[in-house]
Image (cartoon, rainbow, N blue to C red; front, side, top):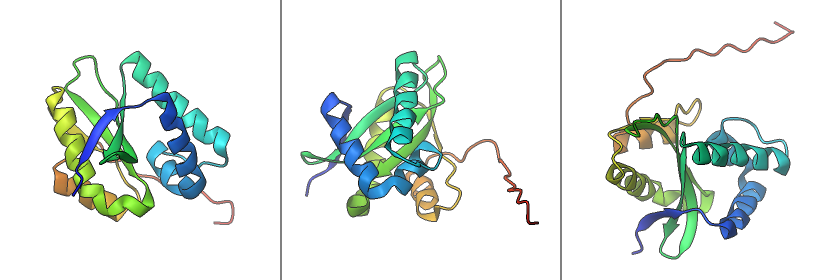
Length: 154
């Protein structure tokens, strides 16, 4: 059975991002942290992430299972010491049965790079993502953020 591995993002992977946006905009929106109204919003979100990669505050890898991409992982909020980061993982819906393998591959690769603390992204309504983060051993986010929505009707 093919294992999950991480590799550098290439220009050709943009086609995968576009395809995944077309089939799972909600999932990509959870990954990016905001609802994606259209493809332009998706492109802007990834451009912001890739800008962080160029500035050294983020890292990004594609996740392959065998020879096929099944998702990607990002590490954000990376300080200059390169020892801690907040982990974000996206697996395309048809391949989510491999989420645990992908998360373990991400953890291994990131740890081999010298990161000592991997903080889980807060998943508001995604209990499966929270359970996966806990199972792999990602640390809970050190700050609890409370959110209140204000509605004009009440």
